[in-house]
Length: 352
Length: 228
Image 1 (cartoon, each protein chain N blue to C red):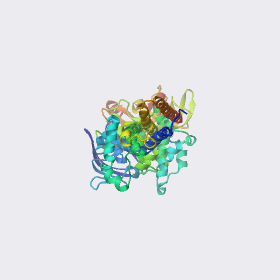
Image 2 (cartoon, each protein chain N blue to C red; image 1 turned 45 degrees about the vertical axis):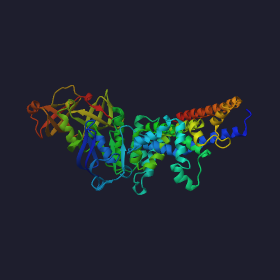
Image 3 (cartoon, each protein chain N blue to C red; image 1 turned 60 degrees about the vertical axis):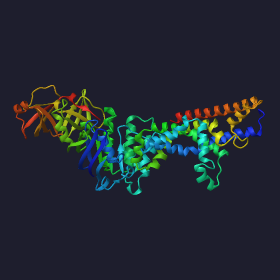
Image 4 (cartoon, rainbow over the protein chains, first blue to last red; image 1 turned 60 degrees about the horizontal axis):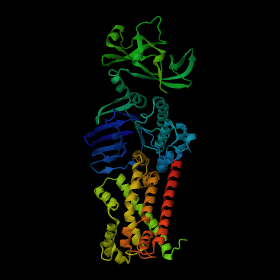
């Protein structure tokens, strides 16, 4: 997917003035509320009209103020999922799901009804009215409805923001799976760094109506590590839980991690803050932390007055730890050096 | 029953007929105006708003008189459109329908607008993004979701139409058997020396019809709540 946008739009005293070119499948639009993210998405979708500029998707111009071209929203073939599900209250689940599918030209119908129903696990809801669904079910139906419109681009406008944490991380795998399974590129709009980290590769950072930075989700998160008290959030996909005394033992690559939170699900997403990883130069004899990993320092990076340490611990992916500058010097943390990382079992928080 | 004369029966039937035809005739126009006022921004919107709502505040007699001037033989519409087509409206039951339509129109539009304004704007966005053009969106989203307002507006207009007097008497006259509706018949009985009983009988009919309309509206409302 290639999206080229250069537009201006004024709303009262607010001016949206953006120019960018993005290529990729998982694009994030990140920024604080009121920064113009949703406005931008509305303009891309064709729900409102820029005062000036051009919008082109995969080489096809959708809007051009010079020629007066403005492809109406119903012909742009973009799907949208809002913060709230916005299901048609007068239609059944099935009626909602098929609304876009029926209006999609047969030659564009590449995504089949049954497949979406299966991936989103909404088969048993089909004949129900939408008013009595739970919040998570409603959002799954909304996602299915947008996907079944067979869009060229899916616009996800804070689709997780209205859900509580528990529900949010139940929806995330569905959202990721459905987009991956049907190869739908998307723009994911959110003010949450964690969601950017989970859902996107590239990120457009929008502040006060302008794109201030075009970066990767990883760099965005690392860049903010210094300012954040919570530190860098490592996201770990852990599998095969086994109960060990009062703890859970999960497999993480070649490692085993002990966590205090867990359940019987075969796989789970956990978050671990960089501030919860303690580094040792040599093997500590006895410590209270339940996890002690031997790691190799891959690289280090500056994060304000702290140093971020990229660690390879033979797990499934890297870990980012952080130490103050002085500690980094004392421990002699340099690329290639070996350190021990101690992590408490309680430091892991299960997301979903 | 009540010793009604054939003219009385025809007044009752005519009242029902005029109110029904006026309501059905106004439905598409009322919907179109309500749609424009709710969803479209255009030059002259305020003028349209005032024009539609004016009959609410104007005395019906004034409306009747203006219609008479406009539709009569020498009137603008009468001379340029009706005469050449050989249509005569003034002093026929059709004039009563037009008078009733104009007077009841703002009530219908207001109810419809209230219904449309309660529709979540995002639903309309969603339908467009899913490939529905505006007419498709109107039929599959706006009509079903503003149905309650459409019905309330129609019922309100029908009820108002049953009672229309001032505008009707000016443009349609008070011709028994032809243009005399219940209110006009009651007026005639009330102004004749021995007509009190007959006027009361027609009042009773009026009350029965009104109660029936209200009950029907109530029943429909409850049914819709249940189906939600």
